[in-house]
Length: 162
Length: 174
Image (cartoon, each protein chain N blue to C red):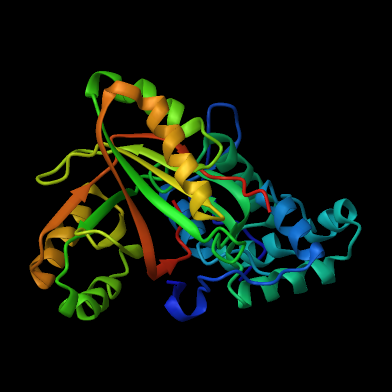
């Protein structure tokens, strides 16, 4: 699993150059599928494949990009997702976060300023394993909990104007 | 060990195109969920690891883009780093009769990145979830107001939850 922990995800703005900005803008839409995709992109960006690869590596390293590659719709592939929430007493917050984060099935976990203060996404291969993973986490952390699988999806994705 | 195909993992569909078996699909997903390698021929590198040809992998990926099992190939920016420091999960209690129609409209707003209908729960009256992103507090306040106006009388209660800390974020993206 390629999980990036808190420390590597900046939550403040990071200075990025005009070149990097253009590159990110360009790469929010489709990365080419061909033998030498960076070379193909270099033509469009008036750049070189080396420069593009270096820039992506740098932007991943400093946390501006959380990912480069295909974005899968796990449900289309037969997997399951759910958004779950816990109401964690503040004095136990860190230890509960540690337990929740220790599960490979936990894809994201966010602290939020609400009575329901911990929100995480579970991703599993089947509805049964999702429920049992949720039950297992709740049993271990012993906090009020909600499992809110989506009933309908309207839109996922955002083209950031940067 | 590379350069040849595990024929048993590729099947012909009705039109004669190769489709991957669930087993191969799941290997493709686990091979790629950490991202594409930054090499001159990234698809060849991944195909070698999967013991299929570069061409087969590219065709499979194109097929997955077409059927939606891959949403897109590209980068996912960390919106905080790009200056979108105000990220809110807005939640709305919308009359079930109108929730489908209005959810669609909310999802179409340009500042909404994720929009879902979810079940209500005890002490949780909200059924419509919309993630909004802005660079300033004023910007997200205006966005919330816009959603509020769109929902009108069908919405009886709403709340918004600001993310205060990313506790975990893996490469697996929804």
